[in-house]
Amino acid sequence: MEVIRVPGVMRQTAKGHLLRGRTIGFVPTMGALHRGHLSLVSRCREENDVAVVSIFVNPAQFGPSEDYQAYPRDVEGDMEKLRAEGVDVLFIPDVDGMYPEGFATYVEVEGLSERLCGAFRPGHFRGVATVVTKLLNIVRPTRAYFGLKDYQQAVIIRRLIADLDIDTEMVGCPTVREDDGLAMSSRNLYLSPAERKAATVIYRTLCQAEEALLSGGKGFAEVRSLMERGLAGEPLVKEVQYASLFDPWTLADISSMDANIYRGRTVLLAVAVVIGRARLIDNKLVEVPGVDQVRP
Ligand code: PAF
Image (cartoon, rainbow, N blue to C red; front, side, top):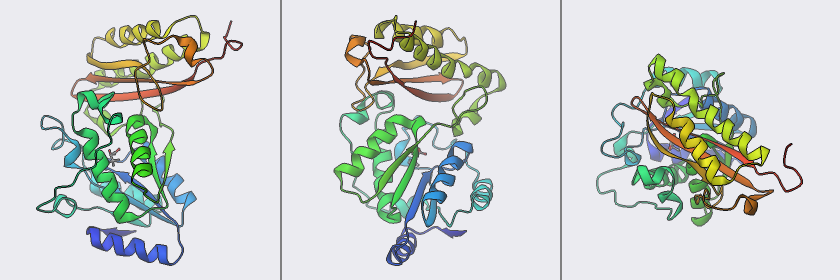
C-alpha cells in the first residue's frame, strides 16, 4: 500500500492512473476504522481498478465545543486494516496540507445543510462539503463511497457533486450494524458498557416506528411521538435532538403531514441522541404501504 501525505503528490498519482485508463475508487474517512468503513473499502476494491482511502480528521467540520481533539485516532491500526483489505493508496494529509495559510474558500450546500444535524451542529456540513470537494479534486475518483448511516451527509454530497459538475459517481452504501442493531460508528468508542447497552434503544425505536408505519394504523405525528417517547424512556439518553419522519430527498420534516400523501412512497426515519459524551445518529428508510398494501 502506497502511503501519500502531500496533496500534490496524491493528485499526480491519481493523474497517472487516469491517464492509463484505470478507474479510481475512493473512500474518504476520518480514521478509527470499523467494519462499516471496511464494507465501503471492500466494495470500492471490487468495483474499481485502484482503491484509494483517505484518513483526515477534518477540523472544519467540528464546532468549537465539539470533539475534534478527542476524536479517536489509531493510524497504525487503520493502516493494518487497510493493508489487509488490499487498498492501493492511503492518502493521509495533515491539516496544513489541506488548509494552508490564507485558505479562504468554503463550499456551502444551502437548505439541506440546515436541517436535521445541521440545526444542532452549525457549520458542520460546510466543513464536510468543503473537505469532500477538496478531496474529490485531489483524488479525482471515478466513484466515491459513503455510508448511509450519515444519510444527510450523503444527500448533501450527492447535491454538491451535481451542482459543481464533479466527475465522480457517488455510491451510497448500507449501514453496517452490531449484532444488537447498533449502527457502527467511531463514536461508539466513547460509550461505557452501560451506555453501550442503552444505545440499543436507537435501532429498536427505529424498528418500532417502521412497524407502526407498515401496519398502517398510525398517522405520522403519532409515529413521531412514539419515537420521541421510546428514546426519552431510556434513562441514559441525555438528550433527544431529533426523532422524526423526513422526506428522503428534501430532508423536510414531514411529521405534521397526512400519511396518505406518502402512500407508496419512501420516508426517512431519522434520530440524533446524546448518550454519555457520544452524539449518535441513525436512520431507516421505510416504504409507506399503498392503500391496498396495508398489513392486517
Ligand atoms: O463521514 C466522514 O467520516 C466524514 O464526514 C468525511 C466524509 C470523511 C469528511 O470528513
